[in-house]
Length: 419
Image 1 (cartoon, helix red, strand yellow):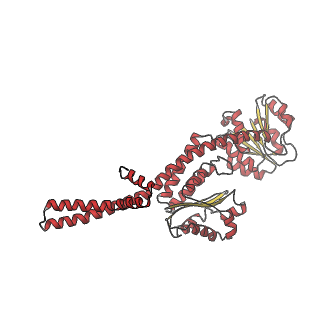
Image 2 (spheres, rainbow, N blue to C red):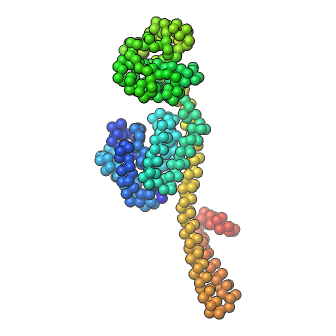
Image 3 (spheres, rainbow, N blue to C red):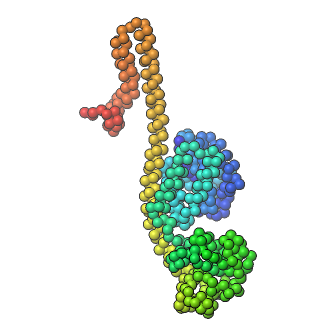
């Protein structure tokens, strides 16, 4: 059997091409069934995300990897040269290493991100449901899941914030150790604020409020995250309730000024307030930082945190590579052992055939009344000659060729003494 992966990702292909090569949920099952029709295809998994499409295969030894590329090209009606320019392909243990690195977030757009592991598990489950997994690839994916868990447990690969949204929430956790007791005001309703809201939901914040110029967009967020909605003009009424304010709008002018925050702090009886401004231009006047009990952080502050954390993740990634090498070698030892299992089975079967042949001759000789001792000696001699014929021939050929390396291996394995 041979292992193969071929695919494209954010490093090799544009968004436009990645969209065309993607396998959505509506076509994934059909695609798997078509893929399994390729001659010599034994097992297959299709991984398709916004940043990558990869096809993992187990082929018969005489299987043609180009057939998989041609299938992908024809399935999506792609130009050969355009696809070929972006396609990468790995075989054998490099396939194993690649999958493990992907699952651990080492090949992701954001180093160490964990979302990809869930996407791999979904792809694996889909292949399982479609009957596209048997032994080799099935075991590889199971091994990969345990590797990813080990990397998350033994390294800090996912512990540090490396996105602005995650960094903002991580900063809030650093100041308010228990976010479940805090109230948060989100200003804006764009993609960044949506990501912030997802991270806050994971922390089970007490209450989320969303202020936006248009209520319709804010309402969409409110329905998903159970937030209270308001217009930007209503911020002064709700700001005193907020322990944390995170703002990201496209406003050319500041939305939250020093005076507004000062009045809110008085209404809060000087209970501290964290304000995180991740907008450019800034949404919160920088003078707010002059107020006692108001702690203002900007996007530049967050980028400093992110850079430090990226360095920490890079160190963790190096530790992860060591784990992956160790686990890859373990899997490849098992994988290579499959070939020896087949050879051993064939060798034993051949020996048993020889045994049966000689036993049949010996029993026939005894039935004819021949001397039993002579029959047994002849049986032992013939069986010994036939069983030692192949290794004896290998020793002779190595000796004639002067191949001392082969002679040394044979001597060791046959427990012989070289002179």
